[in-house]
Image (tube, rainbow, N blue to C red; front, side, top):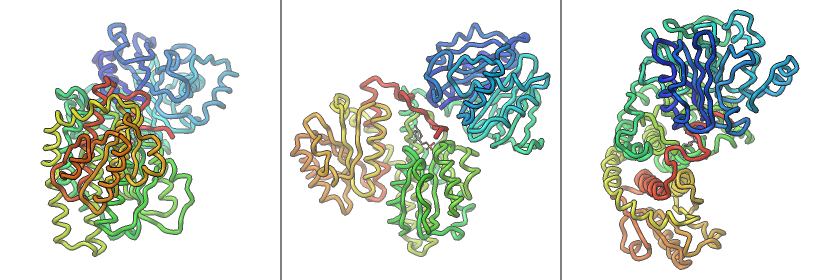
Amino acid sequence: MCGIVGYIGPKKPGEVLINGLKRLDYRGYDSAGVAVSSENEIYLQKKKGRIGDLSEKDIPIGKSGIGHTRWATHGRPSDHNAHPFIDCRGEIAIVHNGIIDNFSSIKEELINNGHEFTSETDSEVIVHLLEENYDGDFLEAFKKTVTRINGSYAILAIHKDSNELLVSRNQSPMVIGVGDQENLVASDAPALLEHTKNVKYLQDGDIARITEDNIEIWNENDELIERETKKIEWDAEDAEKGGYEHFMLKEIFEQPKAIHESILGRLTDFNELDLSQYNLDAVQFIACGTSAHAGFVGKYIFEKIAKIPCTLEFSSEYRHSSPSDSYPLTILLSQSGETLDTIAAAREANRRGNDTLAITNVLDSSITREVDDVMYTQAGPEIGVAATKTFTTQVVMLYLLAVEMGIERNVLSKDQADKYRDELRRLPRKVETILNDKEKIKELTESLSKADDIFFVGRNINYPVALEGALKLKEIAYIHAAGYPAGELKHGPFALLTENTPVIAIAVKDQTFEKMLGNIGEIAARDSPVIVVGDQDKELEKLADENYFIPEVPPLFSPLLVNVVLQLISYYTAYRLDRDIDKPRNLAKSVTVE
Ligand code: G6P
């Protein structure tokens, strides 16, 4: 989704802004622009297209500047609709992330007052409101403007005559980078890391005034307050490709480390969590996209290990569902912690009186302020739009949590708990074995890259993995794919099976294995090419056209291994098709609109 960078200090703003925007380009965007306050004028350059289309050499030297990458919501991608926006007199420039709910009424009022709009965006009202409210005091005008707008926003503004960056946020992330005789601000930390690792996270309702050597923050009640400076543990290199052709491949290969660190990191999390305070009779997982699939795997894990009945809901649906009489523990999963639907679902769960626990990968992200407790996955920054290592670490957290809950509910002995944990500790090695087989997995994708439709089928705990496999392929290879419980194919999709419809069948040796063999036989009888991913088996070898057998693992822990194979299948299929793997068309890394 849109990215924001701001800089004030002695360096060339053009260089800092463009480099910063490049670090945010994984969020997905369709246009980019910068504005710099230079010699009492605002210089503006913005374009539909890539950040690289901006001409850095034309950006003048100046004290401060703001930059933006846009992901269209109101108004199509175009030069006019790109940010920054400047006011009619050319004195003020702003960039905005989010959506201004009441923009139409404000726009009408401003047009009546003589303001001329140059775009179809909701964001442009902000700069005209600032112009309207300005009478020599930029901060006052900014505060007045912010009180007029409703919706979600992160706003960054500069004025040609004042040496400061003004910032505000509501439901859209904003982080200040604290430097030495220079300061920065950005919608996401990777844009700052090259310059500083010391950051202050703004909270909803905050307004900040940032100069070269000072940062002042007012809270939603207009009280001057301090926000703690925190140190980011990642290096700028963690957000680099490190020799891999794509971030996605790098992140797939980081999974052994990410699993290992998530298991280590759990100790501090569990020390802080007091499970006895929760209602553990029922659990509800709520999330979007890949995080929802992690929650769906979690349902099987929790039911098996902790014997807790679970449900899964998409965040966007949960908010509009009818409340029930029960008060399940609500576990919200969000890699970014910024997905607006999931944040709104957290608020709704609280309103319904449920205990709420968030599992997220981003320190201090918005969701952490909406819930009773937080657990952090230790995946490190994930840049590829398609989630990989964060799914894996979310599922690892769910195994660990299920074990703790099983103990808390007296349904799991200490011995059994230790066995489960040992099994988890063995996973990184097994994932490495799969990664070492990447060439073999790549071979499976030759026929897949020629297909228009592909089915993924699984049963039991691997049914959600089939859904995730299909999602990944759609996201990055742009091939239509559907995930199904294997037993359901005969209730409709059979009509679509031909020799041109490959089926990827997940078959592990759990209680559904015999049935799965039957399902694969039925698919093969319809001439569809079958690729089996699962446990080594002679019968499977005979039935499948192609196969990849995972290292030996108890069925309950098979989803993570199978999923790594499916990630590589999607990656290499998309690779053969020369897709924009890290930034698939029309998709964004974090979706901060409803
Ligand atoms: C977007 C991303 C997906 C992600 C989903 C949920 O659609 O492209 O990869 O799974 O949002 O994001 P979250 O940050 O809440 O896990």
